[in-house]
Length: 73
Image (tube, rainbow, N blue to C red):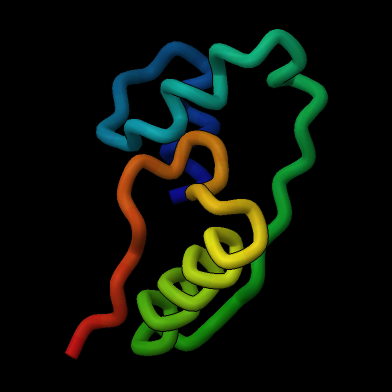
């Protein structure tokens, strides 16, 4: 997903919609990318928890996150 994000910034086509929003920011080239490595089965649950925590604190999703992640069952 990070590679697709960077590709969009370089003008290459992508299906990552949040990348389209981020690259519209005036200072997009100054942003820092950080990530946390997780085992693949844990990624969805972690993203859902991050979204839920962010919404609990700020009342909305983080910028460029268009859909709240839900844990898969």
